[in-house]
Length: 216
Length: 216
DNA sequence: TAGATTGTTAATCGATTAACAATC
DNA sequence: TAGATTGTTAATCGATTAACAATC
Image (cartoon, rainbow over all chains, first blue to last red):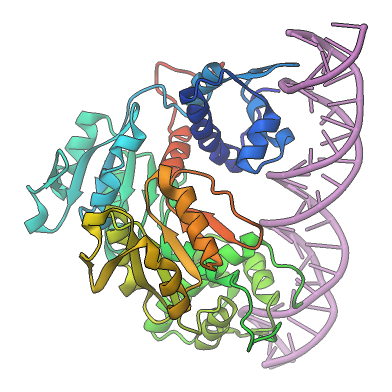
């Protein structure tokens, strides 16, 4: 197939494929079919083939996909074949927890700078990183070539922080604060607010014995 | 409209509506139109009206939606008009960070128990909660009537923990571990793995000067 | 009454799935 | 060759959006 505009749904599945492929690779499995992938990831095999075919002919008919080769290709598509530095704004509990995942993100993606506006936080260490004051943000972002930001500040500060980040040239934001950020088009924002997630889960709880089907 | 089977996309938007409505309510705004909601939440007004109309006639033609009334209705739909206890498994950094959000979840949803399998963790405090050993999970879940779980254990343990939770009667899981959990149908699982999110963000980075459009 | 805005039907758009020729 | 599995087209399914009568 090749090119066309790729839908967000497709892009969101690529990291899931990658994660499982890495797992297969660790287990020294050389080849995988869309059937096996689909079974394990709970997806339709045709969908997986189609997703991958947007980017090239990565498989071999009758055989399947070569695991290391497909890993390489997906990493390239996701731009994970280059070092990507990430800035974290908000050195609270959540920020600290996320910075521990640097090990997970390994290779390519890495949180390389942490900022906070609360004076007592500044200068403290989060793992190996020193918390910096907000007025150093623009220069650090520039120097380190940072293009992605994670926001873990409280709700009230999130928009202000986003504005600063965008001003500094950030291209994509992962936002943990429970607000819809206003950003110019061209800036990609993903919401990662877990309270919203949790609330939607509640909807799926089975009805209690007291409350049968419903009128609202 | 009323009933039909509600799609997941609709359910996921409800908490977003609720969050903004709560904000309006705090600012003592009594009424809101689908137009205003849509503008603020970056959604099509027709979609918002349709979403709400699945559950009942909550608005008034020519007027809009009464804020407190709509809040009440959405809370009821999401089952947030009753106390919902949540169990957290994994008392690491991320688990601790999430437990701080108890303030956010206020009213209805609340993490009321924390478990971990690592002996030195057991008996330590996370906010007001004491970390319990895994073998107490089933009984605590039963006693507290817990129906939702959050998993914040490492990748390797997540499936085992999920099995235990399901065995204990949990109905829904918010999973922060980077694995696809195998669960029986009827158990709702939401993936909250932020590494996947972050990787998909990288896709949207603007092309570098060196690398123009592409072949893969 | 005139203006605003809902609830809902119909139209559109997009994403998923089925089916199959090509081919390893 | 026979069996497996891709890449891709066509069919299906579902979700979003436009449009508008009803009505506050």
